[in-house]
Length: 189
Image (cartoon, rainbow, N blue to C red; front, top):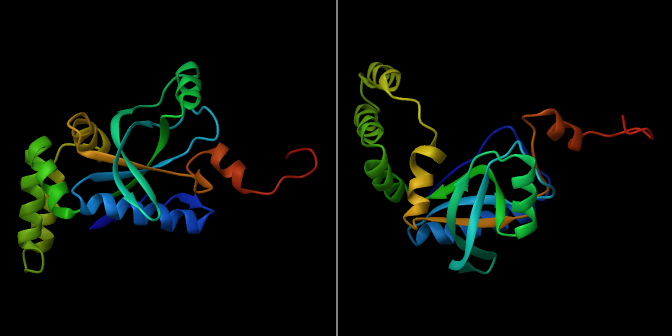
């Protein structure tokens, strides 16, 4: 089981993060591609959303994982407000957990060219050809985000689970995220 996490995020509630990852690991062990979804604190047009169903796919002592219905790209303000009000949507924070064999199988189904490239790099890894093969192969690949290229179609097929979590999370990648993290004076500056 492996995890993939963005490096520019801030997580304030480490205990909640550990619990969410343990729940994600339990769902991943059952063969799901898992995303940790952030419980929204406001309607946000700068984030993508994951819609979850009420179908529990895994129940760990640390929390439940639900089948993901679908991924939604950054919505307009009205749609973001609707998402938050429904209680069925979480922010897509690009925190992923899965078994490597399950990811590779889904990659083979959804992105066969990328799957073959990954296998070619893995085969050359640790040999004198490693750097040349990795450079040549990666340079020739099409640009494809894991969300759009693998997880969105996998969710439609029922292969994705989401673990909702309240982590005290911030995407530090924008001014709003930075503003949530720093001290303010009496005037809000």
